[in-house]
Image (cartoon, rainbow, N blue to C red; front, side):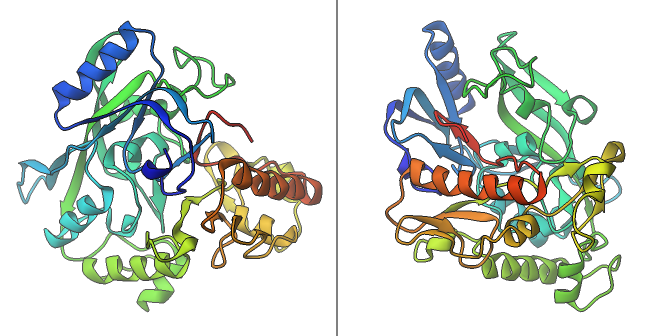
Length: 354
């Protein structure tokens, strides 16, 4: 599994299959279900931390790719239907080149398109939930293909119906341990984008400063993509085999969502942003840094926080999954002790727990 993940850790899979058509993918899933075999569907492997013992089941990797444009009407915008296995940044590059707006700030994010609705992937003020209209899935509970519209997907901050379906065998218990056997296997994702050579209004202050514009203004799509790629590269968030800061799963912890009372208990200079349902979002990176964990904290040559960004946990070349978890546990414990806030991991943990 180390060869299939950007963290480059994880023991062997009992069985590994690559599928290049939807029919092949469904055949593997149905066979696993019929045989009572554990199943793990992987794309780019950029959001997985797999046990050193590996995975006792079938790992299936969807390698389909491409972009279909069934509706290119300038009035209606453009509908893009993308197979789940398509590298996500290929989709962003295509949209920018075709002057379609809505996902330009999501440039450089590794992984497959099928993974984006599961986590409701977001960065620099945009989320895929803002442009997804449909997700077509194989529903393992009902043993049939289903099309889930936006209203059904229940998107939230780094979550969705698809992610919640990964808890327990039927997806109904959000408190159950994560299961690597999700109810829904994503087949393809449909996006609705708008034509234009300027971006959506830029809402992220760091990106606006980099572009030399005010928050809320627009910029040429290609300039936004270039700026985002530069910002991500500066934080070790663009994959580069020669840079161990990119041997990571991106942000290892999500930004905490707090009640107003919890937010009030933080130091006065802690970041606070309004969130849904009256909650307050704060910065996990700020909490980690203020709890005394600097860039590069950990075991040199094995597992450390990134030297560029305290929110990323990185493999320095000799790490095991347990090495990474050891650093993550120490950081999480330190933040709890300092601020009383428990950080939640963003990657999917397979065969391990934090």
